[in-house]
Length: 213
Image (cartoon, rainbow, N blue to C red; front, side, top):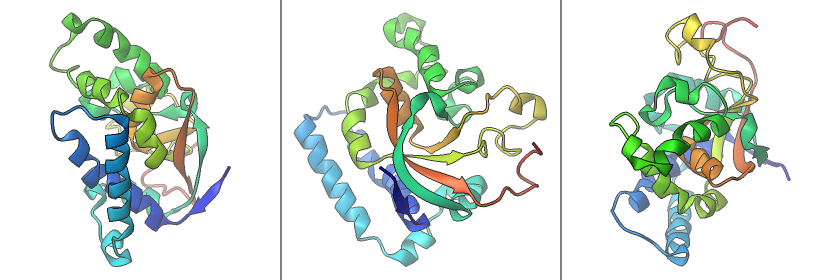
């Protein structure tokens, strides 16, 4: 079922993931499902009290692409196929080739490192965080959907990829994941096929930022 949203809803969701969700995963501790659900409910209540003024002034990681996409899109919430979602290039400092395809492809890329920890390198150590996220991904996504943008405005962006040759290596997906890449990857590793998402549809594409079709 579709649910129409405003940009303030999306900024609030990003704020939760960027500022508040870390409170749960910052400590080396294991939670029961009831404990993590209780913490998530408190996080949502805290976020709901944030003023419109504070949300409009939030830094969004000082990311030009994110500002442009959030404020120049219409928004809705619905369930979408993970196979249609592409991760942010080099998410979590993974090798670029790990993120060239869909998030399902990224899951396939890192799965061998989870199955055999002897293969882990410093570059691939981020998979341990993703493995931890797998314990809670289902319940987190119940409260905090990922944020995606339609029409290849992140992975094919002229700023995200330094050269045209590099940009062409990223397969164009129906949705680019803006926020929640680790959640989506953990969900994919759990064998899920669809994921709850806040979906942005660009009103227009800035010719400076995006290549011509």
